[in-house]
Image (cartoon, rainbow, N blue to C red; front, top):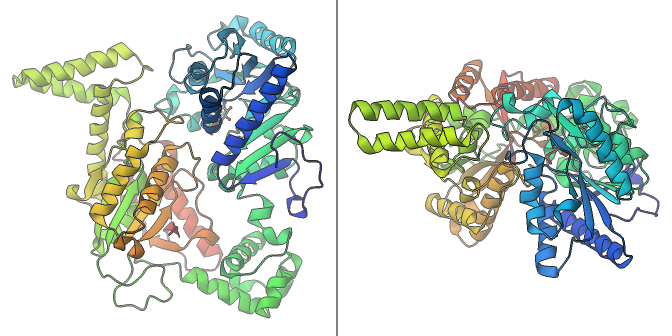
Length: 629
Ligand code: GLP
């Protein structure tokens, strides 16, 4: 199945809700490699024909695996870029080229510095242009694209507002390269890159929708659950200027390439019974009945035969005999996910409980990609596990030092400097003063030297200890792994190595856990959370021969990704109002906490409301988990 070749065969019926060619892959790596191979073939073909290939490029974590593969093709298979001209989609306004978050810098770090493209064939909108000159600069960018012969292939990611490039909601079909003000959601998504939303530029320069639509071929990539909802709207919804990616439906040669997580809201996965025959097992039955109940806003036990028949679920009805039987089946399944005993309840029949009864006290590893993640997503469950006598260890996989603001580091270094001076600790004073001057030297957006990152990591450790105490966890129950990939990287462009897996393996072999709580398995594969999960999955795989592994269950929780839907939940841990308040207090111990993390309790409340409307008991809040292994 070629990505760049438009499909000629009629599309299968199961894709009938999709209004643009959409290819779905198991992961992001194989389509990225395939796209790179097809791009390489197009570059070689253009070369043979004596013309230059004009490539439109995107930033963000999405194309990173594609760029890495292009670099590999250059280094190992002699692919040359001497005949390639590139145009990047966009650039933040007001950032110098050497700013670590400028797209100029990103593209050079991620691609251009590793291939043989002549610098004068690389084009990126200039973010430093004076406001009064920006209109002319944007017009000139359009002219340059035209003069190069137009874009042969435009690579795109998609933002959570549905933007392509930086074409935020409201961008019209014919818009051209221009200055645009960034949407709130976009700025929030970039907050960690810039150490806080307030530092994210307000404006950007972007190619227009019209510029992109003129490309001969367009490929939009999306990975991870976070993109699933906007991808569905762009692929299956109406063409609208509130989702600029939806305009691609009108492009003759546009293709969306998705991994399973980003595709999960498309009708063929979300409601497969609407587009094909489904084998009705326990899981698909639960998915369908929960969907029906939510669609009709009726509790599960009130659904009737007509409801099933009118929504493409008559086969399911036939299997169960009548709606009542199907309702009861799903009601019981949902009921059995609810437990106040996330580590299992010793002495109770566990046939219908999410966790095993034995052993009475389980060894539990709670993995937190950055120190705050586990508290934010499962602080209440953590507290319960401890209260119920399990041997819990919270493992912070990375130091999280990229989150900590300079101001906080300055405060701590300042305190240390004064203390050292007052008490005559010469060495410490010199050390603290060195950090203060390094902070000064690097300026607001410079890259932190090692010392500064170390201090920031220590600050976060202190905050975590405080937060953990609020969840009844003692200091000795916390482990800091400081995975190496994080210490050397930046968000959206980490490069994990075997050393990360080794560190995870060591911790698994040391603890030999019965339960592991982890997150990141449905996240964008270039995200920090996904790298943390992959290092766990690989370490777990390597432990195939260890006896403890047969007895170890993995529970997935969701952090930044889309919350679990009720049909996906395998364990629902209810929280009392008091518990929810304690969790909020714990979250607030982190100075570097972000708005979406502060709002995590809202999603716990939403879980409870969802269960309530399905006809389950009404709880204040619920933390939800999925069994992963
Ligand atoms: C930014 C860029 C887009 C990119 C989007 C998604 O907004 N301007 O071109 O598609 O981010 O980024 P990511 O791939 O990191 O999810």
